[in-house]
Amino acid sequence: MIDPSKIREHMEVVGSDGQHVGTIDKVEGNRIKLAKSDPATQGQHRYIPLDSVGSVEGNAIRLRQTAQEVMRQWQGGAGATGKASGGGKR
Image 1 (cartoon, rainbow, N blue to C red):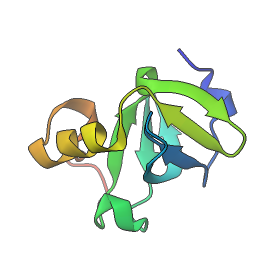
Image 2 (tube, rainbow, N blue to C red; image 1 turned 135 degrees about the horizontal axis):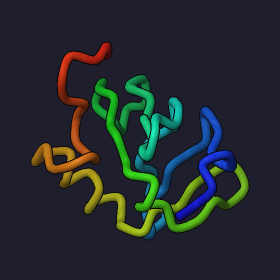
Image 3 (tube, rainbow, N blue to C red; image 1 turned 90 degrees about the vertical axis):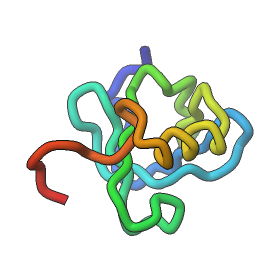
């Protein structure tokens, strides 16, 4: 797993295919919270598990999945990459 201290606010998140997925808001526990202000996240906070990160490259992180695979999980609401659940603030 990637060292979470290497992941910083405002870094770009790209899929394994190099396509934009979002912009990091912050790291929360074992997942990355994406900024809801990024058009790719469709106005919602999205979450990506830290173990989905393949590498940190300059001011971006590259995921192990393609951007399309990650976004498809959001649409289905599957797992930790979907919308936040529970009573947390948005």
